[in-house]
Length: 377
Image 1 (cartoon, rainbow, N blue to C red):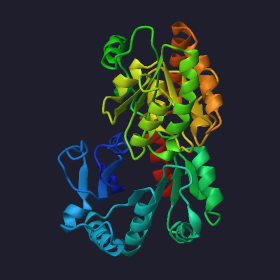
Image 2: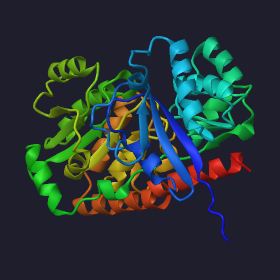
Image 3: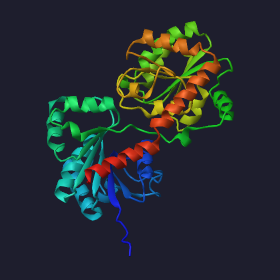
Image 4: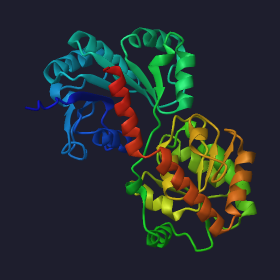
């Protein structure tokens, strides 16, 4: 008589619930449900009925459980998580980013949870001596540190000299290709919605309007682009603390009619299919989902040579420039904007094939499962 194998219980630990997050959702729902029972705990933030994970797996919100705001008290948070761990008894706690790793490691120690995984999503996450000291303590209890790119892995090891090299592993981010794909008929409607004429060369970018994303560099570069390509327009999707400042910058450069700030949008796939060239001028990146999504939408790419970006793109469909170099950025944008539609289409097809080969959500989840298998051997 066959004995049914018990599933490995994995608890994803997330700092704050702020709505659906495709990367986490794809991991949670993509990890093999026959082998793993994945649950999600949000340390802060409350249930709002809009989380698509609520109906698909076991999700709990620690502040709802405690009936109080606990974000400012790590002691209260650790106590609340400890109680939850005693009830749930996961085999693995998968902590995303620093705060959940700190809280999760301490709670897991007292709850006697055997395996902890820390997931690092960006560059320069070990800031200052205090963070380094804290990491040197908690990383002793962590079985593996997952970095979202090889560049992030190098950064983690360089800034945390006490971390054993074998503990750090790179697992590339992946995207749901089917979620981004659209038929050719979508492009016309998407361009019409953005008031783009048939002869407009549409450059675009997607991301938070914060300093590290380099939008100010992009706007400066676009001043030169608009002179050399009079029909060019720039679409900036996203919101953040710099929106007013960036809008003012565009006005002062006389680009108000050329640059369109559309704010936060959930219709990213449609937006991408309206563009001709995707631009990503970040100063620091782990492995950006926006870049992968643009490649699925068959867009040639101009991007900064930072973090994990060089691991994703190739000369066949992308041109990399040094971060903060507005002159080089403008030159690359003009070069790609001057290409024929046929040439850009060929480059875009190559970009999509690159994602299909190495950066799908299925490949990401398979690699994460391999990490779980290795730590439990």
